[in-house]
Image 1: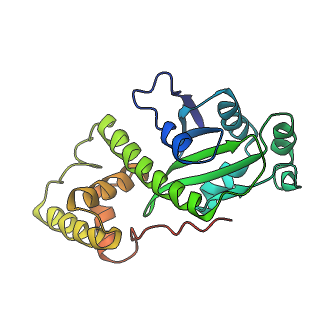
Image 2: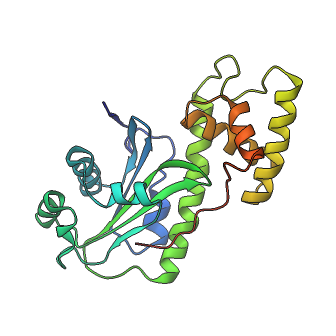
Image 3: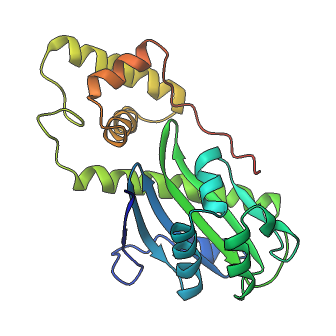
Length: 229
């Protein structure tokens, strides 16, 4: 069963939704974690944004699910333009609100799926290329913030997911994989190890096994292209 909890902007020490409202021509925003069976709302800027997030979770349909599955933005410039045929129940519900456009961006870092940012506007219209680029930069920042927060809150269990594991061979593999991820993702060594730890945690796998997959080129952390559906 999928579990869901709420952590709205009122209780979150850092409102991650705020930059989207400041830097983009949108009315509201919501950010949700989505990892395996865990679904959690991190923040929502207003009641409408919260309702959109809640509806999609309850109905099991909507642009957030497409963005999660495709790892690409899903842009709906006009909610009155027949788009609801893709998500009929959700579409009918949205037509009863003030929402006239929706823009959903996945939160991904290399091979790690973290969640989604759901943006809405109370007037129709496409999101410009420049605004999409801004949104892409914002989602990368949000993804790193959430990944650090997740790993900081989760204790390492016998070093299985986050620590430097026991044998010298494991440590060498992790060091080698960290170097490869550093080159793939164009990040620091610290952040490369963070990506490895985050993937190991999200997949409930030992860090040494994830490192082996990177070394054998079964897994890479190249940035995800942000071409909208």
